[in-house]
Image 1 (cartoon, rainbow, N blue to C red):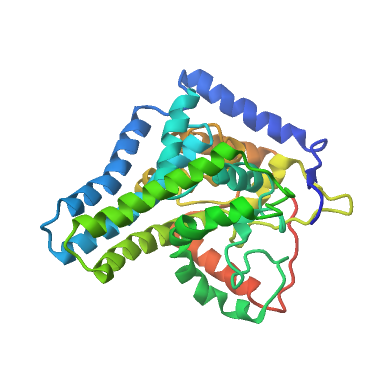
Image 2: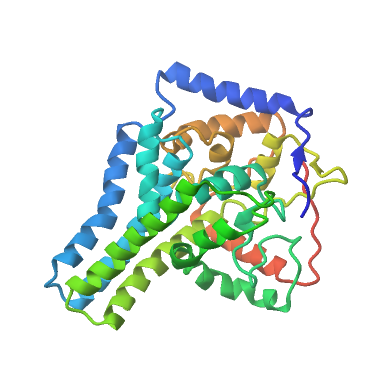
Length: 367
């Protein structure tokens, strides 16, 4: 396992200083908080409702099986929305200036079946610091048969990954709820961390919240509803496949597309760019003018702004995006962006195809 990767933060500091200063000035001039506003609170209630109301309607019973199945599909949309629009901000400490509020909202992440503690390690720390760096960024490790980095060892199965990847993304939340979190608690190394020890209280919280999730979303429906195990599984899997596909696709469009890079550390295990420049090179925005998508995905289509300002609530990203883009243009720094959602999906597909070609040679990009 390589030692900790570092960044050459002694160079190209001007862009970092300028973009931070300009974004700070925007909030000062607008006299607004960097955290959630009324629109974000309304969205939080709406997204939770999209998940909870269908579940409660199902649990009230007396609904045709077809209607219950459709409600499971809606729950999947709400499930993904909770991750995008509520818990992502909360676990970054961006939703509120009050940590108690962030912790309470972050616990929703645990109750729907994931684990906030592990997410903070693998996403907030590892992914945000070592974006697209093979061997460090855990987000590049989806499955053995999917090659999301040109530096991952090539296997013959990767030839077919452009066909396999999207169906595989559908299983993301099922894998998360039943396998991934447990696996990460035992995994070593975890990104750049060797033999990381996890606090006892986090082990306890993992078990309690997982049991809560299994009890509410598996045991209760099986006991309370007049359905067979097979009928339950159809609804349960539908919810998870829907959520998994949405989450999997959206997260991949931020980093594994044609215009992003996958840097390699030099002989001193250093990335030869300032960390902020590294984030600009490895991150991509998409569909910034799609208001419905912007609302639903909680700013994840503004990944550049999110990576530079993870403590700023996603509700503000559409406003600060032009500031970041203009500053990047002035300093000659790339600002990767696809105009539409479909353009970004197409770019991800073509990237999967390139990385699935055993003869493909990676040409690193520079600022």
